[in-house]
Amino acid sequence: MSAVRQFRLVIAAVRGLTAFTLITFGTLYTKVGRSQQVIRPLVHDQVYRAGVKLLPIVCFLGLALGMVLVGQIVSMLQQVGAEKFTGQLLVTVVIRELAPLVAGLVVLARVGTASVIELGTARALGEIEALEALGIDPIHYLVVPRVIGFTVAVSGLTVYFLLLALASGYAFAFVRGLPLSLEEYFNHIAAALTLADFPLLAIKTALFGAMTGLVICYQGLAQPLRLEDIGGATTRTVAMCVVGCLCLDALFVPIYLLV
Image (cartoon, rainbow, N blue to C red; front, side):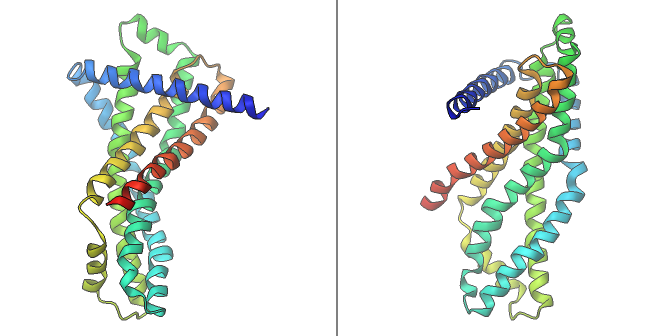
């Protein structure tokens, strides 16, 4: 495939996803408050699938990466006498960058791919047309609960990952006998944090979750699929979500440099 054709496909995918996003948020705005007895349980189900059920995995990753990454950062800085940079490095690497990405990718890998298969199969078997024939808006019934659920799930999992990564990192440093008290450890982190870090982290995690939900639903529903096309749609979903998360993350870099 030529580079020009690949570029055209990327542009077409971006245009299609943008249109799908506008339709989704338009539906969310115009139908907010409608069919709450139906939509609310669907949102709760998505939060449970993408959030609660993934807590053990995220907790394990938080503990493991905390010991491997945070613990070694603290150890190396102590060894070279640069412990004053501990907070700044941990805030930049773990809080601002690693935690949202890990949470978003875990949700994508464990729930997102399964959702693409689920939606793609429904599309291929004509179930979406059946919903429309019954007067049910597929966007309101299938897309909105997933976007809201994934947004809440990624935001919540990020908090759990952060707490466990920072705690296990200090535990690793403590076991190694480093001369760093718990109070000094968290004082370094608190000194490096700014008031803008909290809303920016909330916005970033919400964007990661919403984008993941939108890409999944777009690949599963926005175009006619055959059963044999579902595998390709799943692959495209993973690629688009990873690239999208990295692009969104890059947009926050100049903001962090200014605050």
